[in-house]
Each structure stands twice: as structure tokens, then as C-alpha cells.
Image 1 (cartoon, rainbow, N blue to C red):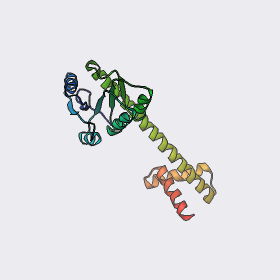
Image 2 (cartoon, rainbow, N blue to C red):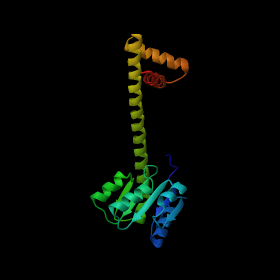
Image 3 (cartoon, rainbow, N blue to C red):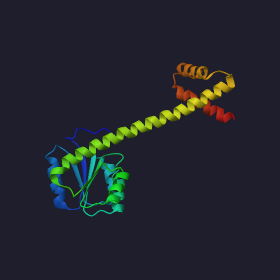
Image 4 (cartoon, one colour):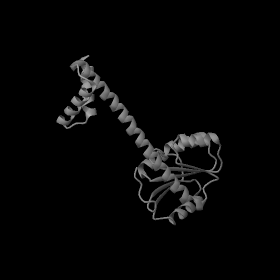
Length: 198
């Protein structure tokens, strides 16, 4: 998820208290021309977040429970966007639940107006860092899977054609070049065909 500059964000605020919500909005408006949506009810949060597609979600929870933290975190899609929780009290289990749900920032002692922008910036930075890590992990997993398939394809060629491992890889690479495909794709086709014939 590529976020726009932090001076022009779409922000969803989940806050029951109307006066407090207005204070948060006023505080955020001082930091940039944000498009701000306030949700007073937690019900339907998932649907609202899906429709509004915010860049960041700020949730103020006065007296959270572990269940409420998990439900709110899941409803606000923390793996798709930065989500910051502001709570009045917490304990180790609630903190753990929030982190496991993918929450980008978990701030105890409530939402203080002068801390909103720094916390939001930190949540966005943390979310982007984890996004990069997730992308790198997925790339590494995919590379390992492709390596396994290529190794299996080389093994098939070595057995059927009686050639060395280097020659088997060279044959895969030449076939890939001739067909305008990736070596991993040619290897996957060979392995699939071998599975069908066995």
C-alpha cells in the first residue's frame, strides 16, 4: 500500500464521544488538508473501512477488553492500512492481542491531542516497514518454492536424459529462452507433465 504524503490523508476516526471526536478532528486539521471521517459506532466498522478506503484508522477505546481489541483490529483491516489504537488502560494480554492483530500503534493513556500527529506518523512508518518485510518474505518464499521446482525438474531431466545437473539446468534455461518464459515456469510445466505421466 503506497500512502500519499502525510499532509493529505484519508483518515477514519472511531470515537464514541462527540466532543472528543471534534477535538480530534480539529487537531488533525491543523496538520494538513485531511479527508476525515468520524464513526461513532463500532458496528459495521469493517464495511465502513472497506467503503472509505482510508489511509489510516485511529481508534479511541476507553476501557478495552481483549475481545474488543481483537474485533476492532480485525474490522479495521490492520494488514491493509495503518491502524492506531488509543486506550486508557492496558495490560500485557491486550497489548499482545493488538500486536498479533497487526495494529501499527498501541498507545496507552488515551488519545492526547498533541500526540495524535506523531503517533499517526509513527503508525504509518511502522506499517510501511512491516509491508516491506512482508513483501520480502513473500519474495523469499516464492524463490524457495521455485528453486525446489527447478531442482525437481533438473532431477527429471538428469534421470531421463542421463545428463549432469549443469547440463539439465542449461537445457531448462535454453528452453526458457527459446519460449520466452522464465526457467521456473518451464520447470513447473515439466514437473506437472511428469506428474501426469506417472
